Image 1: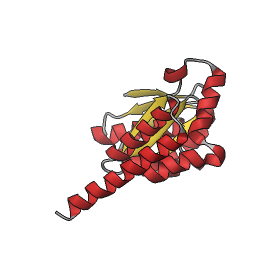
Image 2 (image 1 turned 90 degrees about the vertical axis):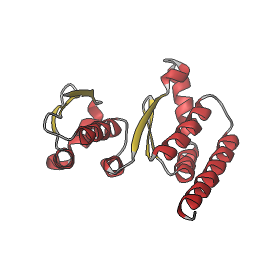
Image 3 (image 1 turned 135 degrees about the vertical axis):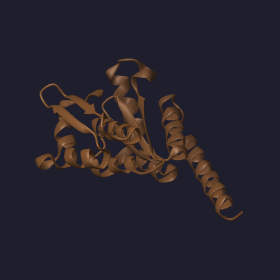
Image 4 (image 1 turned 180 degrees about the vertical axis):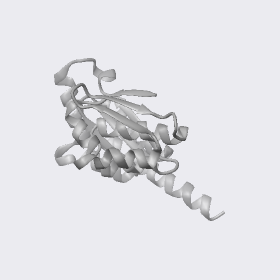
Length: 181
């Protein structure tokens, strides 16, 4: 059994129209989801599920709770795809003003910074309330996480973009070497 807390505003997204999303998660993973929409409590009964699929179901629920749409979160069920959450409060404490500023830095004007991080790292990113959630393969998650943490620590956007471009070249080169050696 796994217990999660989901914001009440995300419960409807997790359940889906006529319970469609909930049923799909249960079918893909073999777990049983019990959702208390009043309190936002989610219980994942993994007693009859493959342990890896149970963890993927947990990560799917956490991804939706952290602002991902189910359509973008389904990626978690693929092989070698990981999910990570960065807590913005770890960088600034509970100061609402500072949290709002940092969320804005990560999102950028009209979503530009978030889009660039996604394009250059290959990861999917969601900025929701006090967290930044990342979905991707191991290298994608590590690169996106480092870029977000650099922004949270105050690095300039240009520095982040240069870092991402270098990492993208490195990833392309290592993939080229892997397939052509």
